[in-house]
Length: 511
Image (tube, rainbow, N blue to C red):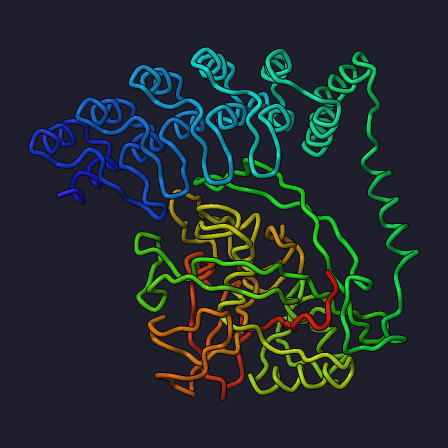
């Protein structure tokens, strides 16, 4: 009986919604890829009267999706002052947080953008939340408060209000300046600098800091060819910094996230290198929930997997890397920094063997479990960017929207690797561009799958089918999901949308 209520809510038919509620349909029914309450759907679609009717019929004003995103946060995201007032009066928890630490206050400072003035945030909602006891000092998983996030929104009034109520340090003010500068909010950046000077603090020069780190890395870089090439240690590891984004259910960027990770590189000759990123060990839930859009039985059952630490290519193998190792380039979409495609699976294996001969390290295709773990990078949403995908942050066929996201474009070809933001591990192009082949044989589902991260080569196998992941420039977003998996014939030359990236294990690494 819940399905008819959900569909009627989506259509915005208030009379029919009231009829179904009177007949006993569940006002707390759940739907969507994050198993959100139907109340969340009503708010997201702007059906305020329907949302009120659901609450009056018993919908939980503290309802949340599987990521912890509350209905109050959705109302704040949408800039719906009327709905925020209603939910607060109904007892919504003003300080609840998602799994990544996002609060309603953080949603409010980046609420629906004022396109005319190019600013974000709702001061009205901010004041209501503060009056209801919202904590302005709460931090998300990136140790950011609402103040630092507001700096990128361009809303001077919101920033001034938060400065009045937030326990800010000089370091936090400096990061707020960094956020404002990166978002082109020069007025806010200058105001924050004045605040630091007023407090007697020092304004940090991030550009100089980053340049200094690059110089340090360059001075300490060691030619690994002069050492035991079968031994990898932190002595040879370098650090690189990166910036990525988080999007909301509409595909709008709500946050820029800075990160850093360690890597080493292999010198392939002629100035060409292969960068390998360190993936930390950990546990994760592999597979797709049944309510995720695009779900297929082959992505079930979800199961816990432990992944030992390993290295994975920062990018898919490029045409110049392939040419350097193999001596030819079969790719259809030519470009030295584009991913190689159009190769047989056994040629991929041969590429790994050639790398072993060149470097003394054993390279291979990653297992399915390693690939999904590395792709998710600690996230549980359909994509590592969030609940949807856009063609502004990945190369795929955007003519069909995913979830609440908008339609985009189809570039009809591969793109240069690294053209789009990475995930939280610093890996690029894990969604779209080219499918990436794994080392596992194809199995119709995960019943009996290994739990240690190894490739699944035994059991009920079909040796004429292997597995590829990540989607391509020619596929819809649903095939680019972290959990999506496709079978392919290893005895046929791959299409112009299929490539691979390599992995290797950590050997004799010091802590």
